[in-house]
Amino acid sequence: MAAVTQAVARPTVLLVEDDPDIRGTMAEALHDEGYEVAMAINGPEGLRVLSTLAGPCLVLLDLEIPRLDGRAFVERLREDARFGETRVVGMTGEPGPMLPGAVELLRKPIKLGALLASVARHCPGLEAGKPPRSSAQ
Image 1: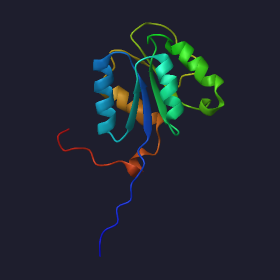
Image 2: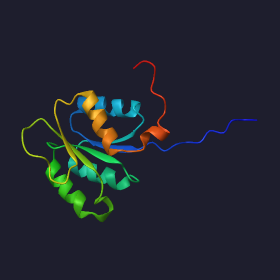
Image 3: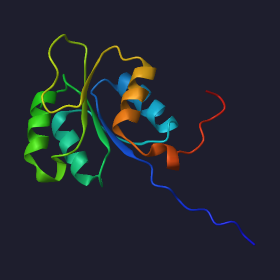
Image 4: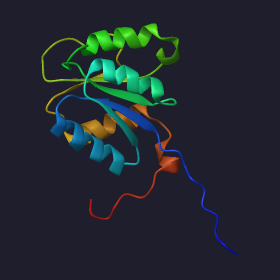
């Protein structure tokens, strides 16, 4: 009898980051942890990509992105009923207060462990469908 394999949906994270090195490193680490990663390089593109996703568990948002900064991005996000409950984790290298509308603020440079812990906190339920991590880690 043949084994039946059932596909398990991986939680999706939208990563809005303009620095290609940071974006690539974060996306690879998140993918290795079992997340689908959608990416954007600025605010308007982030909103466009978000509108194409079916229920992302989290938006990782650089606050100093071009064309529409992180604060304006969150304001627009909260105005759209489809995304009113979408969790946002802000990322910044600048000092300052918590981003209104965000669930957490990570200070750059972000350590990999802190990034993964934050995403795990805000994207519950991954463990049940998480593929095994590679043995190279």
